[in-house]
Image (cartoon, rainbow, N blue to C red; front, side, top):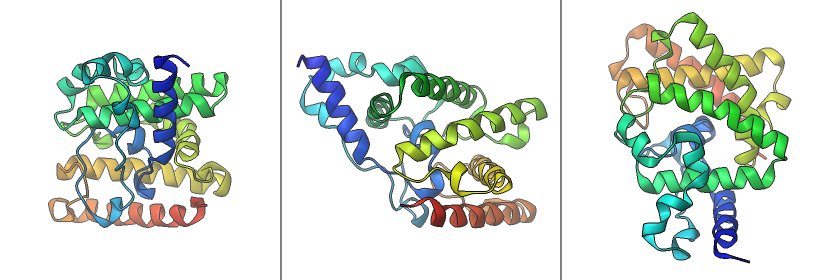
Amino acid sequence: MNLEERVKEAMQEEGKKIVSSPHLKRKIILQVTMKSRGNTMKKRILTTVLAAALLVPTSAFAYKAMFADEVYGSFDNVKKHIASATLEGYMRLDGKLATAQGEMSEKEYEQFMKHLKVITDSKLKYGNDNGSIDYDQLSEKKKEELLETSLQIQPYFDQLNGEKSSKEVLTEDEYVWYIKALMTYETMLAKSGSSGSVDVNKLSVEDREEFLEAERIMEYVNGKVQK
């Protein structure tokens, strides 16, 4: 086994160990590069450092982040748009994508990356310094496009998180409500200017009620998807 194969295998193994908050499944891929702040919503946040770090020199990391680079172009490109991005998080993302390639069929991985690119491109274009999008500021056409993409990609996120497919355990209406709740949660992150938990004190009364409803939906889904 050559060095590149050893690195890929190590990334896949570490990627399998990395878990995310039940409420932030999309963030495991979309915002895994952010600095995390402790709170009950994120008690299962990523903590594992890639074992691949032991296999190659630090100077080789930029080259070895081949999966993350496929999505974002480079860590430097992410940093230009998302101030809170970290190299450690970028390498975790690379490990998670390596796991995805190892666990999915070629066709599944191709579709996964296609949908992922749509969302990550939107985050770089419309997201704030923490990578959170205020969907209320988008056109209805763009919002609908990202909703449809999120509906398609969420089962892949569930698979990578080692959980049941939310699309399969929920009714059709419940599944749409769930994805909209995830988007609402991200909107409130953007409005409160937080990269971790939502500061409800920074939300209007109307937004606060909308956030709490989204939180209830995510709690409900969490109980269904955990294996």
